[in-house]
Length: 520
Image (cartoon, rainbow, N blue to C red):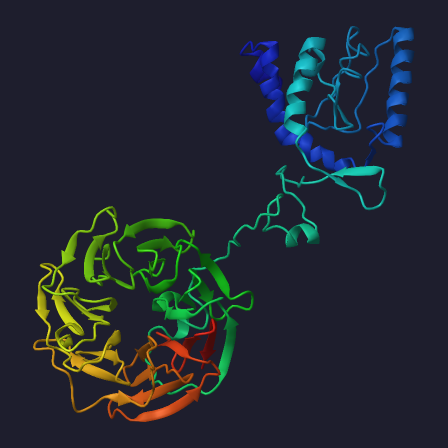
């Protein structure tokens, strides 16, 4: 087949190098498995030397007699079945013996005995040998364990595909480069965990957890926020810290819990938020920027530059490319597709102070903000309602007490939102006009002492969970407002706490000293 296709098309002899490359890929490499070992210094084994010497003696004898005899090959390297005999002018002229052998890295492979290959001239064979050397010379050589003077060809399987064999030492060092520079470990991050999948579509009653499940020494500084991912990927949660890092954790991993360490900020990271698909995050930092990062690749998608410290940010729940960030005396609307300039600045006739949190309603048409402004006449700026499209403030008389609010949460089942106040309680407000505070019920008993303590509401809305400056976690009944349980976390200051979006009675909390704990 090979001879007919080439001769019939009158190919040039020097074009045979291309043919030989294809033949090498199909046949030569698989036949190399038959060569178990050979000597480095001589390039061939003792058995090969004996075979070559015998072939030379036999050829010389044939040439002296002048008789051409049919020589059968024991090994058909190229996979070409043939029973052809040598011609008078090519029986032992070197093209089928010395010049007809390829020597690559000390390994010799003979050109097969066929009419097609016997017709090649010496120049053609040399050209083919040089082209084949380029193909095969890069194949890795591994030192044989049996003898230091023996070497074996590795990376060859039955399908002629190059596969490198790794030793156990190479496997351990697979994640570092030759210059010992650390390369991030590429692990599968986004999948539905076996613990999550059976309970994604069921709503279980939540109770305070009973025991510690995991303790993580997460950061070298204060951990400001911890947040679970969306329900589909809720085996993941993020943490932000004063050490300028945002870390992504796998809560149920038997390996290292940290799956990503994102270093896109130059100063402390105050807040971070998962996107709607759970594959990217918005992080807000004291380096006057907010960064959108692709978690799977760890690369920065866009950077939103601000004039002041960026301390909070949220994605619009409906318009998924729209973002609202809170900075010093300003709230800004951004589109991450055009990150160079803000789409809108939300204006107010007086200073707003340092924004602490932003919260959208479910339809995305309105949002609420809270700040740390505390003065004699600052009650109109503690909690404010805004129209997202027009940027007009809808109400500035929501919270009349002179305490700063540091966190806002939307209740999952009722038309209310909650705010963490420095008055040592969590207050309840209506999400519809006139946005009045529910004075008949509040959740009090924990302490803040000036810390920006976070809180959360369980998936079914039955529990309100808050951190505390004394290191405890407080669980309140939403219907009655009474304290159900105080859980000792073992942390110095419980800075933030969040309920799992799928698993009942599972919470994660973080501390002032950089630790993270998971309870269930």
